[in-house]
Image (spheres, rainbow, N blue to C red):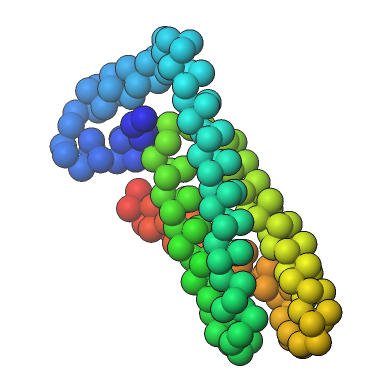
Length: 172
């Protein structure tokens, strides 16, 4: 899939000193290419999109399960730092891949909200379960689940905001 953000393409071609008629014609060709895309390719694009979403949700879940020992055995600062770094890494990767997929903005927005929402829901239930299991053993864990989710959300969102800020600076 190629990146077909018309503003970016227009800006890049203008930087390369293309004439306005050639830029307009190129953008028109790219716009029409989507309309005339074979239905099988459209279907494959949708399948790839949904597989990516499913894989990212599974990756989030596996990462949360994998970092549970770090959250249990370390101080709150280390636990919160770890979840912030995980949020940053996953947010960067997901945002990077979604930006380079040939999807429209509503799918991009849906993915950017749906993936972390499902991940945060899992995180809330999973941490609640872990806390209850640890209490049964007689240990005490002092993790604030809501703060954990907020820190993860902030970390997950930062790469997208950084990209949007740099994109707006580049287009000016």
